[in-house]
Image (cartoon, rainbow, N blue to C red; front, side, top):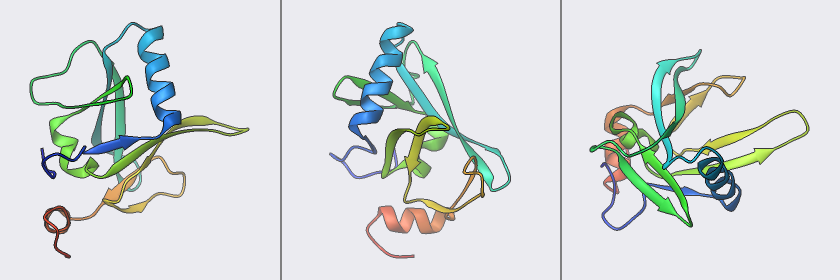
Length: 128
């Protein structure tokens, strides 16, 4: 994992914890795996899927009963992210407050990450 020893790579708000634990219980699943894939108008999209068990290279985060597995290819891009769950009059869903995002599309469905060198420098405590 690209991160700081002893520090959780992601955090979850109480609303996200509540929604994840509800989904885990409803569908009798071990947790949610989050990742990223190419797509959307900004270049990358978040992915989420139910899982019954972690893959050997997943980073597993347990917070107050909510379990999230971070896919290996997404670990560097998600470090420092806060996952929230928001409900509004028109929509509800998970929101990723991610310090590694450089830009996002207007609809909010896709993101563009900072370049790899900049991410590595920031995670090591330097500035790019």
